[in-house]
Length: 381
Ligand SMILES: Cc1cc2nc3c(=O)[nH]c(=O)nc-3n(C[C@H](O)[C@H](O)[C@H](O)COP(=O)(O)OP(=O)(O)OC[C@H]3O[C@@H](n4cnc5c(N)ncnc54)[C@H](O)[C@@H]3O)c2cc1C
Image (cartoon, rainbow, N blue to C red; front, side, top):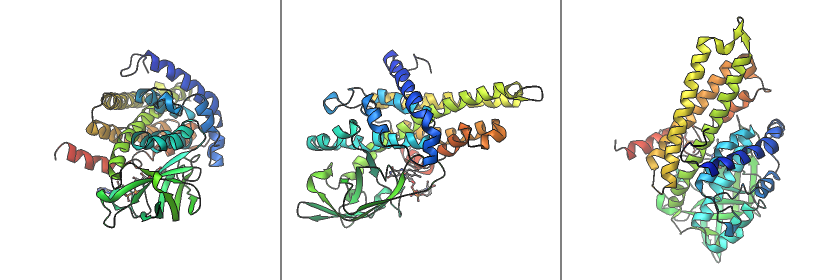
């Protein structure tokens, strides 16, 4: 990526070099083992914190680096170099979806109690919205919080929650009115403790991450853990989605770039019919198409990022970036796997894992279909 590639400056490119170095040194060599273990160790969080990487966009007063979303964007792009979608997802859930609502909507006391230790890597967070009965239709959640003296009693179940086993706190969407719907959702920060149980799920990719079902049984949550306004949770969900979708788009372009580089290298080295694979026009043309796809996705994502950082409300551009990049990433991985031939189907080659990991993109954080639903409204169809 060019150092002059807007919206990044030389300072961001310096950060990129340092983040990349850390990821390639400290995370990538363990990727295979962590995938086999179906878990990456919790001490990855304090290690990242020691480098300032859990708080790039947060103010120094909370232990952050005092940067902004552009610094975080660099991290999102570089995480692909960990070589493990699951590890990137666990770290990303903490940085990009669990802590931002506390920063944005939390009281000063909540920031001290939850954001500060999370940035220091002492605690791990998760965001719990999806339930067994509903995902895309967020307003249909049924986990309920009933008012009691000094707080709430929460009952219900969340599922597919990233960091769902290891998280110390879960930023949880609950129904706080009988009617529910858009106007009856609130957020509670739920500490792991009595009544909170998790069970880990097996899945196609992201093996190093703990995606889990979390059950809440008569969990008492104190009053001071209400995050944002009562019955105003939908606003929080919508605000959070914009950065989550941008972060996923940035992650996709990082992953696409890396896969392209490695596949081009493979195609230059692997011989068939007396010449390198890249010497066959069909393969060279495919690689040219894939480079075009990486470039297109990068332009669209960086445009949405620039608007987001400039304080616009780029719902259309972020939605388009998410829709474009997640499908393009999976298609690129599939094409790269094909260029690897039988090797692409083997566990020892990175592309086997990258292709499985990329399949989540068009589903998570709002599916392709939901992105199209949003776009039809935004563009006035
Ligand atoms: C590995 C993984 C990690 C995840 N991490 C988290 C997390 O940390 N926190 C969290 O809260 N959630 C998380 N999720 C949940 C994820 O956000 C949901 O799976 C996603 O939003 C889709 O919801 P669903 O699975 O309930 O599918 P559904 O909503 O049941 O949809 C099923 C299918 O129907 C389509 N569909 C639904 N409605 C419409 C419509 N109106 N028009 C056309 N098509 C439609 C969908 O696009 C999809 O293809 C994770 C999921 C996975 C797989």
